Image 1 (cartoon, rainbow, N blue to C red):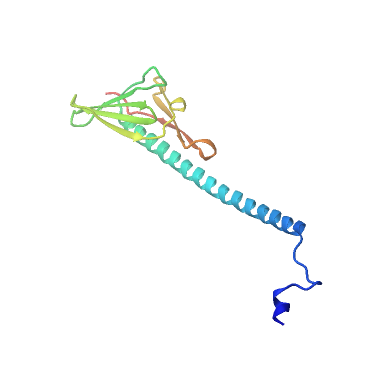
Image 2 (cartoon, rainbow, N blue to C red; image 1 turned 30 degrees about the vertical axis):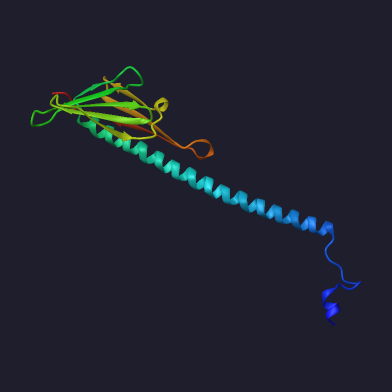
Length: 173
């Protein structure tokens, strides 16, 4: 009986080479499909995360600049896409405030000076695309239009966000 267990009989057969190749091909297709699906999930997750970062950066830039622009009594735009943008105002105590916005690399930088004191620089937002970011001052209608574009990531994982802010500064005294 032990001999029967260890050796295959004449009527018993194993898998043929063709059957094994077909089984390996089906296994490879299933593994390839699963790998592709997993990679798409990771790619979509990275793109979503990059897009949310771009949205946050565009909102940070627009919110901060809008706040300062609403306070401004004097608006001076620069030559290159409106930058550097200079906003100036006096508060109710008579203090003079000046804020200068500029795009430096991929950062929107805010330089603040009060009463001609020493200026302080702060990065307001990162990932700013300088080719898609601009300021237009319409002196006739007293409207400052700020377009900000934020780009995060590269290739298929890139996230973009463009926002347009229109602000009416307070009138000069």
